[in-house]
Length: 198
Image (cartoon, rainbow, N blue to C red; front, side, top):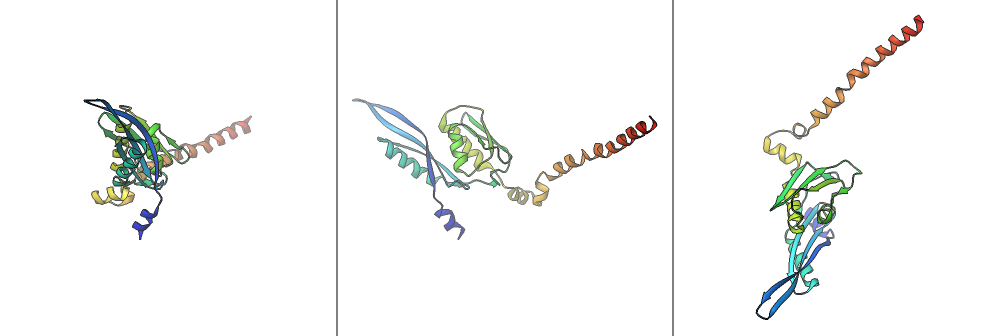
């Protein structure tokens, strides 16, 4: 039943780049077009495709068909990713970092298209290598595919989900400020006594 729901979701497409390429033949140059397309359902599935043809519309349709073959599901935590990851492909490196609610998609160019169509609404992304659109998008996709859910990590390590999540660190941070708060009333009492003596 879940598969039917996933398939019934409408896939949206976004053309990231169209490039004119030339092949030198005996009679001169033969021009064709390449298209780089991202498709996704804006919930949790996304795919990247590349197509080449003599005309732009045909190149785009080929790229969309290629993207449909490469669809994958992104593990999300709310509207952001589960953990920080560095995606790499060739000379491209894209750092993806989870962000708090309301941050928005902080990313540029084609990376933004991939993240938005994957259903991510709060994320920080930074390109650390080449700015070649194809390699940047492939690095982003590689990073998203490498993401893991807490349940998967817990299963591989033989732990519970609560042991995997960094909850202990948060508790320590909450308990640390408690000591100075308790110390404040003593100083205020001391001040009150000084005023009484005066």
